[in-house]
Image (cartoon, rainbow, N blue to C red; front, side, top):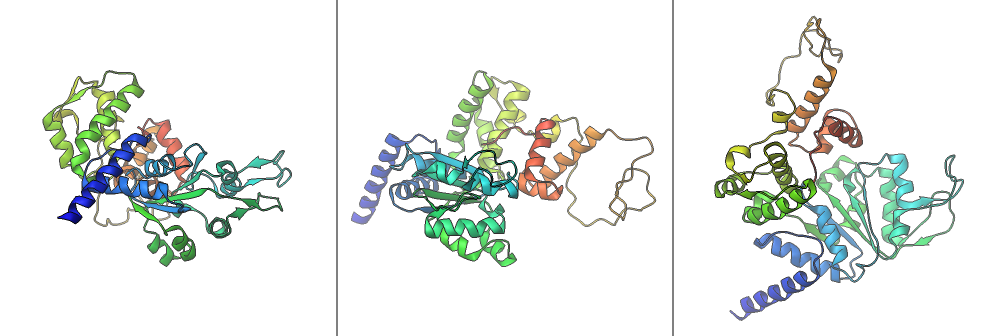
Length: 362
C-alpha cells in the first residue's frame, strides 16, 4: 500500500510540474499518455544527449521532440528540425553541417548548418530511417566525438546540444536489410521513447477532439462547432491507422465541406475520394492476371507502358486518381505512397498540394 501511495504522489508531482511548464500541447490523460509525459520530463531534465522517439506516422513524434526541448533547461536555446526524407541527399549534408565559401560552385558565402545553429539547443532529425548511408556515418561521428566540420572546412566545430531522432520504421529490420547502420542505431537508442498509437488510447479521443477543433477553427477563421455524443462514440470506435494526424484531417474535412454547428455521425465518414470528383476505387488485395498488351482501353501493358485509350484521357483526373489510390492503399502514409508511385516524398507532397489533397498535418 505504501508503495502505491508513493507512486501516486510521484505522478501527481510530475504532472503538476508538467502543467506549470508545458508549452507544447501533449494531449491525453490515459495511462499510456501519463507515462509518456513522465518519461518526457525525466529525459528533458536529464543530461541525455541522444534520444530516439519511436512511433507510427501521425502519432505526434515531433510534439514529443519539442516537449523534450521546451521542458529542459535549454528551452531558450534553438530548436532546429529537419526531415531527412524531404531533402535531396546532395543538400542534406550541407543543411546539417553547413559549408565554407568556395566549397562548391554555388557556395558564394559561408553557410551555418543546423548543428551549428542549434548550439546548446536541440537538433531534431525526423524520419531518421530515411537518412542516406554516407550521412549516417557522419552523424555517428558527431554523436561519438561531439564535433563536425563544415563542407570544405578543416576546423572542427564543437556541438554541445541534444540530438532527438524520430522514426516510424522498425530500424532493426532496416539493419537486417543493410539500409541502416547498427552502430548508429545503438548509439541513438540509448534513451528510447515510444509514442503510443491512438487506437491504444481511445479514452483520450474526446479531449483530443476538443483540442483539435479549437486549433482547426482558429486556423480556418470559423466558429468552433460542438460534437454530438454519437459522433464521439463513432470516433472512438475507429482504428485510426493515421493516428492523431488522421483524426485532425477528418475533423478539418468535416468543417470545410459541411460547415456544421454540430458535428454528427452522419457527416464524419469522409474520405479524400469523396471530395475530388472521383469514384471510390477499392484496393484489390488479390493478385490479378497481367493485362493484355493488345488492350486499347487505358491499361498497363507487359512492357510497363500505359496504353492510351482511343478517345483520350483527362490527365489531371488520371493523376489525381493515382494519388488518391496510392494514399488509400498505404493508409495515407505519404512515405509509402511516394514509393508506390516511384517518386520522392517531396514530389508527392507537391502533387498532393497541386490537387488540394494535402489537407493538413497534425
